Image (tube, rainbow, N blue to C red; front, top):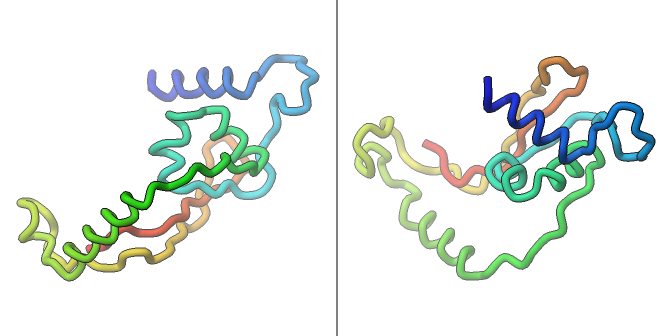
Length: 130
């Protein structure tokens, strides 16, 4: 519970929520469903809470930065090695199954945000699937 309270107060600072404020960007509610990717939770909120707010409320994407080609090469090599392998043979305690399904696009069903009329969904691409 303390973590949720901390996140809310941090978000309030980021979005400049002030009673009676006249700025056009204060206290805006998201319009339409909120679409988030797993990387938004993993990186965007921690790296730039203001960018997270702008993405959710104003639908403004963060400027893209160049993606070094070495990471794409590593990703392709790892997928080439692991695809088709038995998961239980790779790590003790992994569920039985074959690793596959890379780069498949997925989208969750609609998610209700507690205390809000706003709907959300999580979308992205799978790295792997058992």
